[in-house]
Each structure stands twice: as C-alpha cells, then as structure tokens.
Amino acid sequence: MQNLLLVGALGIGGALLLITFIVSRIIYICPPNEVLIFSGGHRRLATGDGDKTVGYRVVQGGRGLRIPLIEVVDRMNLTNMVIELRVQGAYSRGGIPLNVQGVANVKISSKTVQLANAIERFLSMTREQIMQVARETLEGNLRGVLSTLTPEEVNQDREKFAGALVHEADHDLARLGLELDNLKIQHVSDDKGYLDSIGRRQTAELLKTSRISEAENHALSNENAATNFMSQEMSKVDAQIATARAEGQRRVVEAQTRKSALVAESKGQVQALLAKATAEVQVQRARLAQVRYQLIADRVKPAEAKKSQMMAQARGAASKIIEDGKATASAIRSLGETWAKAGDSARQIFVAQKLSSLVGTMMSTVGEMPIDKLTVIDKELANNGGNFAVKAAITSEQLKQILGVDVAAAVQRLAGGEVKQLPAHIVSPPPSPRPRTPTTPGTKSEG
Image (cartoon, rainbow, N blue to C red; front, top):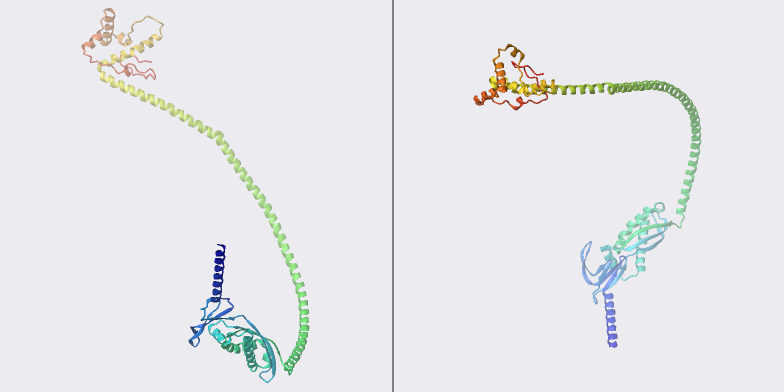
C-alpha cells in the first residue's frame, strides 16, 4: 500500500514538472522594456508603403503563447544605449580640422515601422554590435554636419550644432530602426590652434572692451559723483526749506488748534449751562406734573368719586320715588276702575273696607275699652241731618243692634248679588307703602 502511494506521488510530481516545463516553453512573459519576436508564422504588417506579409509577430509588454515546433522566440531590449562619439580631424567649413567629443542616447524604436526595420537588421545581434552600428552612423552624420559649419559656429553655438546633428541623424537612424533620444556636444578642439587664436583674439577684444568700459565707467562714476553731490546739496537746501515750512505750518496749525480748543471750551461751558437750564426746566415740568397729579389724586378724584356717589344715591332715591309713584298710580288706576264698575255702591263698600283700619287708628289713641263695633259718620253730614244715606246707615245700625236685623245684608240678598266683592288688593291694601287715598264725598281722608 505504501509503495502504491509513493508511486502515485512520484507520478503526480513528474506530471507537474512536465506540465511546468511545457508551460515554460509555451508561455513567454514580456516586460515593458523588451519586445518578444515569435518567428515562424505569417501575418500582415501595416507600413508606410502599404501592408506586407512578414514571418513573425511582435509582443511588446505582456505575454504570448508560442506554437511548439513551429515558432521560435527571440527577445530584443528597448532600453537606452549610451554611445560616446569621438571625431578626429573632421574638416569644418573653411578647411579647419576639428576634434569633437559628444555623447548620445540611442534606443531601438518601439514604433511599428521602425521596430520592423530594427528586427530585420538587428535580430540576434548583441547590444555591443548594435551600439557599434549606431556609433559609426552618428560619427558619419557628425562629420557631415561639421562640414557645413564654421569653427566659430561650432564652438560658440553648440546647441545649434547639436540640433543640426540630430536633424541629420534622425533619418538615418530611423531606417536602421533606432531612435535618438538626445545628443550633447561635450568638447570641441583643433590641432592647429585656430580656436585658441580665436580665443586670444576674442580675449583681446574683451580686454579692449573692458578697458574702454572701465574708462567710460570711471568717467560716468565721476559725473555721477558730481551729480550726486549737487543733488545732495540741493536736497539739503530743500530739506531746510521744507523744515522751515513745516515749522511755520506747525505753528499755524497749533494756533488754529488752540483757537479751536478755546472756542470748543467756551461752547462746552455754554452748552453745559444750557443743558443745566434745560434739565432744570425739565425738572420743574416734572414737578409741575407731579403737583398736578397730586392735586388730581387728592382733590379732583375724591370730588368726582363723591359726585358719582351722590348722583348714584340721587338716582336711587329718584328711582324709589318713581317706582312708588308708579305703584300708587297703578293702585289709584285700579281703584278707579273698580269704583267705576261698582257703581253707586262703591262708596259704601270703600268706606266699609277702610272702616277697620280707621277704627284701629282711632282706638289706638284711646285706652283699652270693650267696644264691639264702631260706626263713623261724617260730622257735617250728621249735623245737617239731611243726608238720606247717613240716616239710612244710622237706622240700619240701630235696627241691627236693637232688633238683630241686618238691613244691608237683606238688601244685598234681595238684589241677587249685584254688588260684587271688591278685589283683594283694594279690600286689604298692603300696609307699606300706604298711599294717600282721595277723599270721597261724605268721608274724611286718612292720615
């Protein structure tokens, strides 16, 4: 059992190693600074002259799958190649041989057309071989550019020289599939001493120019010194004049300020007195208002309150009198109506109703006496003796007392009850208030 497990593990490990080997031979990883060329297939490539068929395919940055037994994979580096340029005895315009040293940064171009040129020319070549081809090409271009420039132009304007060289070399390098990043001229010299003589001449010119400039500057310095001295003295005079003017102005301003201060002080005093008087007036006005309010509170308001009280009392008394009068008038009106309805018997009924109260009043002035009944007859009527009603009343009472016969009741029964009973408020009027009844003929008024 253990042998079988060991054999199985060895088989799985061998299979994994085989798969890893196969995958490593099929899948290729390309970094960004390289190009993978899979040779063996056919594909269409777009160029400046049209499409053409090539026997390779390119993978720049990423990964690619190789067809086993059909394709071959090559790598091409796209990093910069630093090339040192040295040209000895290159003739410039004018026949002066020059020695030039420079440095250039060259790389294989990643553009499609130029990369195709580089693959066709440099595939399977080392970087040293590619650098040698680029160096020889640039040195040839350098000699060609030097022939169009004078030593002075080469030495004085190296930027222009480098620009012309780059412009000249770009076309040739592009045909090779290379790309020039930059080019710098480091040193320019000659074996004949021409540049030194130019330097000495320029040095002499510079020395002459510097001496002339020094003399001119010295003269200008003296002139400026004199001008500065004059300006300084004039500035002193102007400063003294300005100081005197400022002093006079200060005195004027001080006097004006003092004047303003005195005026302001006087105005302040006057305004203070005015404010004090105004405040006193306000105080007196407030005091006057206080006294007025005090008088109103002490005299006017109590008087008004008393007036209102008296008016209210008068209205109350008047209302009572009016109501009493209305009640009396109503009672008299009812009495008159009842009197009119009773006819001729009204007078006897009225006297009979009032007789009890009248007897009570009369008996109150006399001591206690055993009186059973009291009949009141008018003095004037009794004295004259000619009134039939009085005689009838006296006779009726005498008959009633002597014989026990009530004539008035008998007459009333015979009349069939024509004499009606007076209303209760007339028969027994309320004791208070007691209205004054009118005096009827044959009776005395009460009270």
